[in-house]
Length: 210
Image (tube, rainbow, N blue to C red; front, side, top):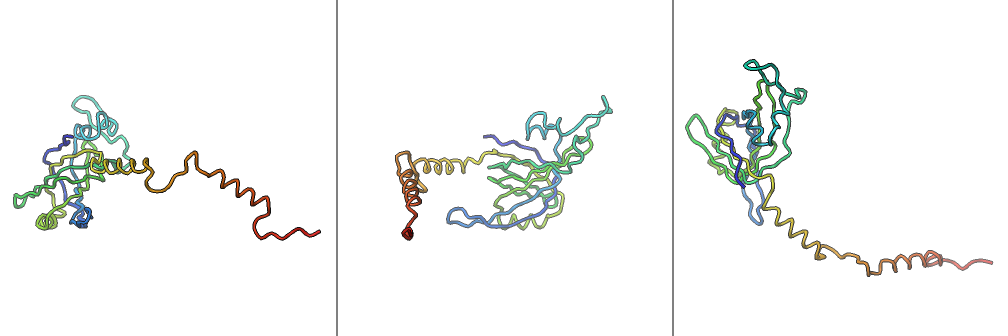
């Protein structure tokens, strides 16, 4: 599936959360990278979310050259997308020393829209990727600074997880993961035995006194 790309634009490098992930028997270094203040125009919003989404987020006031856009729902400060974008990519460029890092095969999640007067939507995203130690040093050195980013959103379907889920479902259909009671099993006989035991008074009852 082709990536949905958004060309180089400003961003602020926010919170960095270095961590590890288990990939089978291998433990790899990973990091959550929050980028804030990424500007999207109305066309960008529709490109990512679908046609007419921008029209639902903004109302038009005035006519002709005096037309302005206002947030449709100003009482909501932030609007969060539910999607996670798999196999995405981001290129973060640092203005000070004219260097950049390229993060491939990452996940993009926690996409948050903040609608602004005038029609620009300020976007924040969380990138979940695997920067090298050198790249982590560059990110920390520029944390809180305004840099630029080119973002490529991938698929909202995790194609790697799908075969695992299909295999698991197939295993359940074949009877793995525990015995099942079929239509010819003795489930009814067990209930009948319990009923007989109840009618006879159960084990250990004393004989009736006359």
